[in-house]
Length: 85
Image 1 (cartoon, rainbow, N blue to C red):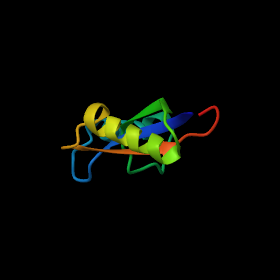
Image 2: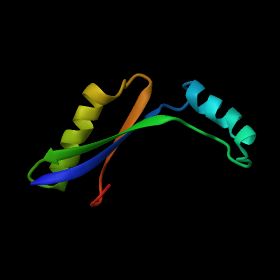
Image 3: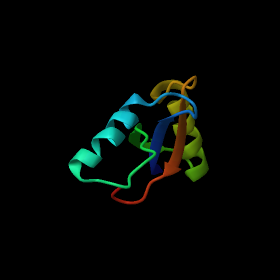
């Protein structure tokens, strides 16, 4: 069975996020006030063939840790997606 899985990759706590900082500094000039703590990351949508939801998440997590992220500086989390996501 195929399962839609969403993998989010973000920088670990304490790692500088220059992209997020640049976005945060630009927001007031664009009229967006009151927005703080901006962090940039990556999002991947995968269709994973597996026997059940747990196996799909396990496969996606392994893939994220080995290929989609740098585990030294990034965290990767996998969750099941909803239809159309």
